[in-house]
Image (cartoon, rainbow over all chains, first blue to last red; front, side):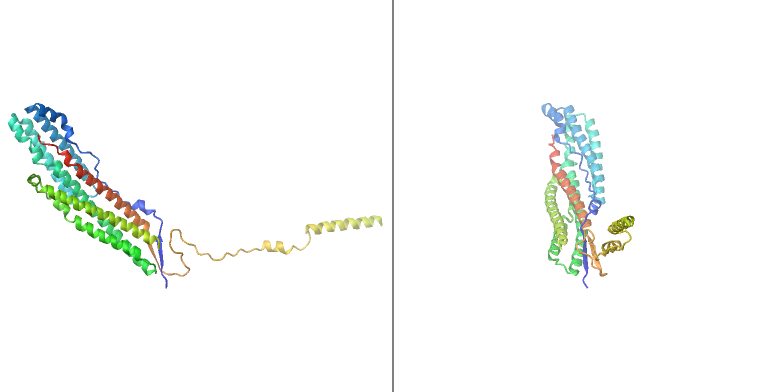
Amino acid sequence: MTRRLHLILAAPAAALLATTVSVAPAAALSSPVTCATERAANAAHPTVETLRALADCEIDRRLDDLRALDSSVAASTLLAAAHADAITAVADADASGLTALRATIDGDASFVALAADVPHIWRDYRVYLLLLRQAWLTTAADGIDVAAADLGTVSDELHAAVDAAAMAGKDTIAAAAQVDALDAALAQAGSLAGGVAAELLALTPAGYNAGSAEPVIRADRAALANARAQIRAARSDAAAAVAALRAL
Amino acid sequence: MKNTAGRIAILLAIALLLAACGHGTTRGPAASSAASRTVTAAPVATIPAGTMAAPSASPEPSFTFDLGAIEGQLSGIDAQLNGIDAAFSQSDAAPSAEGAQP
């Protein structure tokens, strides 16, 4: 008995099934230019007032960017809940610490005391060199996990379609090869991205200041970029498998 | 006689006219066929829109795969890849915001 294979070619469900993804990167970061006026004034005539004004400006833009980070994390559909909580906890702790530091700096009466407190804005928090990179690279790592899981589901469906087509007497060699390539790319992506988020989130400002964190960040970014490339390859393989099934 | 011949001529003319119109005569074969025409269509297998194979009359089991749904999932993965790209961009932009310590 010949079994018939029906492949539904119309794709009305595509729009319905498309995932809405939000990483909410809307707010642009501040930059050192934000405090350019205060920096120039302090460089020209370093006094308690000019240094305090620069310090307050640097703290304020960090607080703004930490609030924006909190909003982005809350809106993200890619971050794992535990990772989102961890990032938010650090961001909130940094905001509290910087707010307290601002009060200390505003109370410093001497230039010496002020000059001793100001560097804490950078050294104790590493908001931009560490926290924001941790947050966004962790978002990328979790996004790769999410995409890999969804592509795994696609792979299962494509395997079933290929098997059924073979039972119906179709030549499935091309489609099966594409699904195998999809599986291999997914395995590679998982191997590259596995454990990266946890490694990133374990980094600290102290480790950054000691020089141990930056190499980890760079290595993790490179691994994630390779994992992203594998996800792209897997997605292309899945599309090619669909095309091969359509051609049967 | 003259009247009788005239009447006969008129009656013949009427009879010929009626015969020409078919009135009072048996219908011809063409008219009969048109009234009783039966249209018999040969059985035609309909092919459902969007299917690869035309169904046969036999009740064989069939497999259905919604490739459109899979393509919908791939669209979702494209959106995820866009989000991943944005995360990389944000991460790459962050170090330049640190600024120099005075």
